[in-house]
Image 1 (cartoon, rainbow, N blue to C red):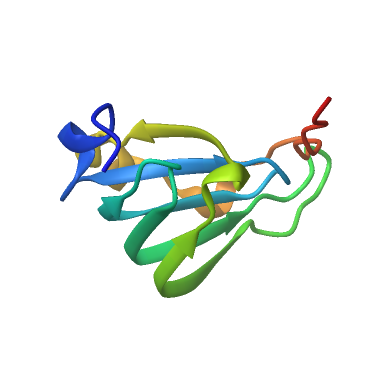
Image 2: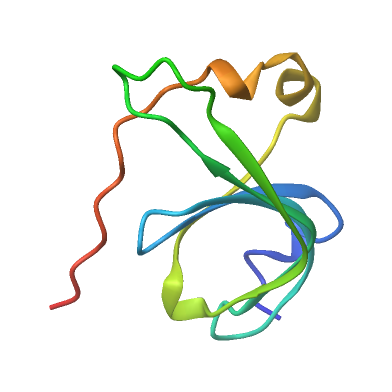
Length: 100
Protein backbone atom coordinates (compact mmCIF):
# COMPACT_ATOMS: atom_id res chain seq x y z
CA UNK A 1 0.00 0.00 0.00
CA UNK A 2 1.18 3.51 -0.74
CA UNK A 3 2.68 4.78 2.50
CA UNK A 4 1.29 8.28 1.92
CA UNK A 5 -2.27 6.94 1.91
CA UNK A 6 -1.93 4.73 5.02
CA UNK A 7 -3.27 7.45 7.37
CA UNK A 8 -6.39 7.72 5.18
CA UNK A 9 -7.39 4.03 5.41
CA UNK A 10 -10.72 3.62 7.20
CA UNK A 11 -11.54 7.31 6.76
CA UNK A 12 -13.82 9.15 4.37
CA UNK A 13 -11.99 10.61 1.38
CA UNK A 14 -12.91 12.59 -1.71
CA UNK A 15 -11.37 11.64 -5.04
CA UNK A 16 -11.19 13.82 -8.12
CA UNK A 17 -10.49 11.71 -11.16
CA UNK A 18 -8.57 12.63 -14.27
CA UNK A 19 -11.83 12.68 -16.23
CA UNK A 20 -13.38 15.22 -13.82
CA UNK A 21 -15.54 12.94 -11.63
CA UNK A 22 -16.09 13.66 -7.92
CA UNK A 23 -16.29 10.51 -5.74
CA UNK A 24 -16.56 10.26 -1.95
CA UNK A 25 -16.31 7.10 0.15
CA UNK A 26 -14.46 5.26 2.89
CA UNK A 27 -10.95 4.30 1.78
CA UNK A 28 -10.53 0.57 2.34
CA UNK A 29 -7.14 0.13 0.70
CA UNK A 30 -4.63 1.24 -1.90
CA UNK A 31 -1.61 -0.27 -3.60
CA UNK A 32 1.76 1.01 -4.81
CA UNK A 33 0.24 2.28 -8.08
CA UNK A 34 -2.50 4.22 -6.19
CA UNK A 35 -5.32 1.89 -7.21
CA UNK A 36 -7.97 2.71 -4.60
CA UNK A 37 -10.74 0.65 -3.03
CA UNK A 38 -13.63 2.72 -1.66
CA UNK A 39 -16.68 1.53 0.26
CA UNK A 40 -20.04 3.32 0.53
CA UNK A 41 -19.01 5.36 -2.50
CA UNK A 42 -21.13 8.17 -3.87
CA UNK A 43 -20.57 10.27 -6.96
CA UNK A 44 -21.65 13.89 -6.95
CA UNK A 45 -23.00 15.26 -10.22
CA UNK A 46 -23.01 19.04 -9.89
CA UNK A 47 -25.32 21.19 -11.96
CA UNK A 48 -23.90 24.16 -13.90
CA UNK A 49 -23.79 27.54 -12.19
CA UNK A 50 -26.84 28.87 -14.06
CA UNK A 51 -29.03 25.78 -13.51
CA UNK A 52 -32.08 25.67 -11.27
CA UNK A 53 -32.13 21.85 -11.14
CA UNK A 54 -30.74 20.21 -7.98
CA UNK A 55 -27.32 18.58 -8.11
CA UNK A 56 -27.45 14.78 -7.87
CA UNK A 57 -25.80 12.08 -5.79
CA UNK A 58 -25.38 8.59 -7.26
CA UNK A 59 -24.62 5.66 -4.94
CA UNK A 60 -21.97 3.20 -6.19
CA UNK A 61 -21.26 1.14 -3.03
CA UNK A 62 -17.95 -0.75 -3.28
CA UNK A 63 -15.83 0.96 -5.94
CA UNK A 64 -12.34 0.48 -7.37
CA UNK A 65 -10.50 3.38 -9.01
CA UNK A 66 -7.44 2.75 -11.15
CA UNK A 67 -4.41 4.66 -9.92
CA UNK A 68 -3.75 6.36 -13.24
CA UNK A 69 -7.25 7.86 -13.02
CA UNK A 70 -6.71 9.46 -9.57
CA UNK A 71 -5.95 13.19 -9.79
CA UNK A 72 -6.55 14.20 -6.14
CA UNK A 73 -7.26 12.27 -2.93
CA UNK A 74 -8.13 14.21 0.21
CA UNK A 75 -9.63 13.61 3.65
CA UNK A 76 -13.21 14.70 4.31
CA UNK A 77 -14.18 16.55 7.47
CA UNK A 78 -17.33 14.57 8.19
CA UNK A 79 -18.82 17.21 10.51
CA UNK A 80 -18.66 19.85 7.79
CA UNK A 81 -19.78 17.32 5.18
CA UNK A 82 -23.03 16.67 7.08
CA UNK A 83 -23.89 20.38 7.17
CA UNK A 84 -23.70 20.90 3.38
CA UNK A 85 -26.85 20.66 1.29
CA UNK A 86 -25.18 19.12 -1.76
CA UNK A 87 -28.32 19.46 -3.88
CA UNK A 88 -27.81 23.24 -3.76
CA UNK A 89 -24.12 23.19 -4.73
CA UNK A 90 -23.38 24.37 -8.28
CA UNK A 91 -20.08 24.08 -10.09
CA UNK A 92 -18.55 24.57 -13.48
CA UNK A 93 -17.58 21.19 -14.96
CA UNK A 94 -14.02 20.08 -14.40
CA UNK A 95 -12.14 19.43 -17.60
CA UNK A 96 -10.28 16.17 -18.08
CA UNK A 97 -6.53 15.99 -17.55
CA UNK A 98 -4.20 15.79 -20.48
CA UNK A 99 -1.17 13.53 -20.17
CA UNK A 100 1.97 14.52 -21.99
